[in-house]
Amino acid sequence: MYRRLTLACAAAVTLASPSLADEVVVFAAASMKTALDAVAADFEAATGHSVTISYAGSNALAKQIIAGAPADIFISAAVNWMDEVEKAGLVNQRRDLLGNRLVLVAHGTGAAPVQIGPGFDLAGLLGDGILSMAMVDAVPAGQYGKAALEHLGVWPKVEASVAQSENVRAALNLVAAGEAPYGIVYATDAAAGDNVTVVGTFPPDSHPAIIYPAALLTGATDEADRAFFRALSGDAADARFSEQGFVILN
Image 1 (cartoon, helix red, strand yellow):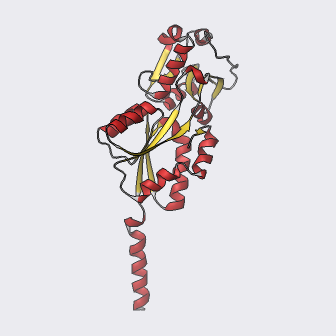
Image 2: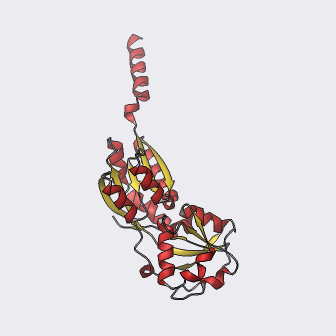
């Protein structure tokens, strides 16, 4: 009886021990939410570790990390914001993880396709409506979108009609809710959204290449952090990202 009680108590202590499971804190671009939530759930089920993810615009996340916010892994939607974190001496390992495409979405399901090319009549499509975009001077999706419209020669005609949101998912939600007839988002966001239709894809040469670099930060201290960073480039994660429409780069 004594031996059975001892073994039971030891088992209880072992199960309750926090050393068996660690928390991985990830800061990630808002456009990754649908796919990365699935990747994290798979990792948690396989390892017993927990993954806590903060989603926002890459610019906001980079500034928070540089200011001292505790994060183990950062995934940015643009190289320049990862560069800022690396310049601050906060990157341990880094790799280009994913690519994406930039699309024009319309509210609802019956919108006609749009031929996107130099001088296309985006202003005419908008009429008196607004064009939903992420912040064009700070958030990667907005920066890519503005660059594409400038390259195609239509930015001056629509600039006054742009409604800017703090991240690309918020920009998508304006279109889904019918508050904006059109918006510029990533293809992966459009795939995750309801009540929107992709009506056109911007030519890849109309904007800088959309690259998502991932970094293991210097604040990452345990094996769980390193394991999740490795898992981001594994076959299971690749399948999740591909399902959502990301381009696998690793």
